[in-house]
Image (cartoon, rainbow, N blue to C red; front, side, top):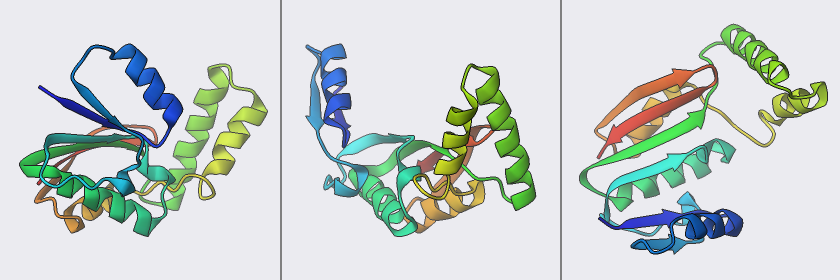
Length: 157
C-alpha cells in the first residue's frame, strides 16, 4: 500500500514526515486546488480544509479530488458546516460558544472563533455539501457523521 500526502503547509508536512519516517509515502506541498493527479487513487481524503475556500475555489478543489480518484474510488471529507436555517445556525453557534468557554477558552478566544465565520471560514450546509459532491462528478454522496457544526461525507466516483 502506498500513500500520498498533500498539504499546503510546509510545517504540517515536516511534522508528518517526522512521524511517518521509513514508510512508502510521497509528500507534496500543494493544496487541493493544485492537485493534478488523474485516476491515481482508491481513496482521497480532505479533512477540515475546504471550508476556508470561496464557492468557486471549493468546487475546483472537490473536482480535482474527484479526478484524482479511480472509478469506484471513495472521497471522504470532514468539514465545518452551517445549519440549514439562520435560526438553527444561531442556536448551534451559541451552543458551540458555550462548549468552547466550558473547555477553557477565554471570552476573547470564543469571540475570535465566532468572528472568523464568513470572513476566514465559509461553511456550507449538509445539503449544499451533498449537492456540490454530485455536481463535481460523484455518483453517490452521503452524510456519514455530524456533531454540532461539523460533518463527515462519503462520496463515490
